[in-house]
Length: 458
Image (cartoon, rainbow, N blue to C red; front, side, top):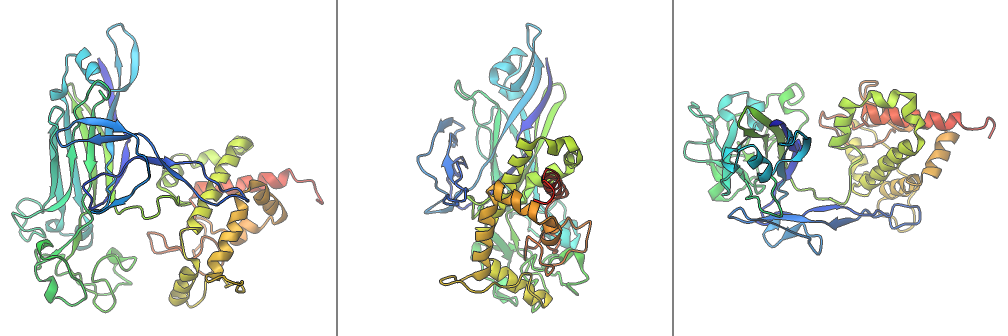
């Protein structure tokens, strides 16, 4: 019998794109971040699954990296695969991807598989707190149904003042269950996100503000709570903080323009007979405009901080020097890549405009350097991907981390102008970005272990 099922991955991020062709599959290749290297992170093609309109699934390996075509950005369309644990007819316990053969061994077929996808765009609802401003879509798919099913975003049934009028919908993407074959027998579902379009009210042209959209996308209800939302005081209304969250939030308007995009998030659920159910999360967001530049603070870091924060406080963890060194090198490589993806001079000027002081003093201009602070930062961080250099700096300057790296916000009142890194970067709460507690504790513990091994007086 099948004892348990789950979905891989448990969380997937789709990315919007106007092209009808999904983005191919890539991975990070060898990076040349050594002190004498090119400083580049490479991206290389790997095996990709192609899903035809009739559900036929095949594989190929792309010959080159390509993120756009003549139709626009290619969307990232993740697959969800059903995994489980079961006891075979010979009494052996097994774990792995569920296939048509596994189903057949228990008297099941594709028609017994049920998929349910529920997604929503709740941004307008979050601000107005009116259920009529919810934009939701659902699709139910049998495992033997291999056609594409649209996810049409509508207001709740029976809404008195719906944001999306009856008979209209915002396309939030689609889902499709591939037909398993001899080479690819696993049970899968593919999610395709929206195209990255924005939709507006029928009176958008008459409203204040310089906003224009194609006429075919102007069908939302101008009299909905979202269409009539006004911001009385940006500093006091936490629903609109940080500023700039929606069209019309500008200080000159302070009024929603009633516009909604086609991003969404939700759940993917698969069910088998006998009450076996598994659920995964899906999130749709904008394209990654710098896919070869990894952020120093990722979703994986945030999750690790929730489930494995205490690990790094165990002295035995830092005592595993090779593993700790790998984590530190990875962190500082990602810091360097982040530096290569941002204009620090502009960020510094933004802080000066907001807080009346710069986050970092601008160094003396070098010959030929157009962005003094950006160029200076990239040169400095380029050195630190060589761990020997970083180790020496931390041994020689015991207070360097306290002086130059911003602790997690739970320890201090964060400031953009305290000279701590990362500089000028804003977090989701409007305050300065900082490392996770796990990252910061591991960094400080590692630096402390380096100093403990230093001979006094050297």
